[in-house]
Image: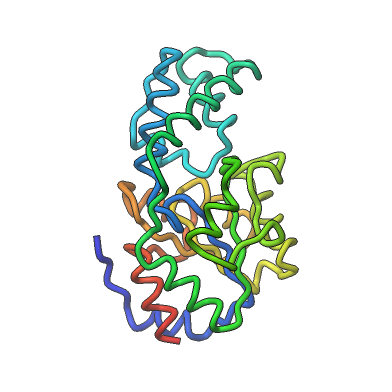
Length: 235
């Protein structure tokens, strides 16, 4: 999908010079959502829960615990126990790791370099709790991310769509909401950022419908990271 970007959008972006960008990770920096979808489907199937690829994309950004508990409520009419959550998430993580090395999202590195070269702060806000997260990021995006500019599942009580992750991101970068742009690909992530009063650009890099992102409040929906790079280079 390649959406047409109007001259008015370029003009609007040009008039706003943010001090910071907060990026989601899966589906924005890494083309990892197909791997996550397969892992979630297998892990939940092991306890008799049917889960579709589309549901994974809709839930993306939530903590693993919330994804599991929501599935239990929907199909087993009860909350998952902590032991069940731990077991299923460990299983999901194992399936995901068996998928192989992550694949950087096309144009993500160019986008990050462009933002950095403009002197704009960079942060990342993810619902992931993968232990190898920082080393993976440094392998593909050397010198851009550190614990000081990252918010992960370990940093929050309430994951996306709650605004807490993005409010933490603002705090870590010492910026206000009106000085910041969020780059997201998931409805729950968009809702989280919008609830934190941050201008939110959705890059539709997966199988979702554009309306899935618009209905959760995205200020702008693009067809991929290549269009985001075009916007940045136009400034």
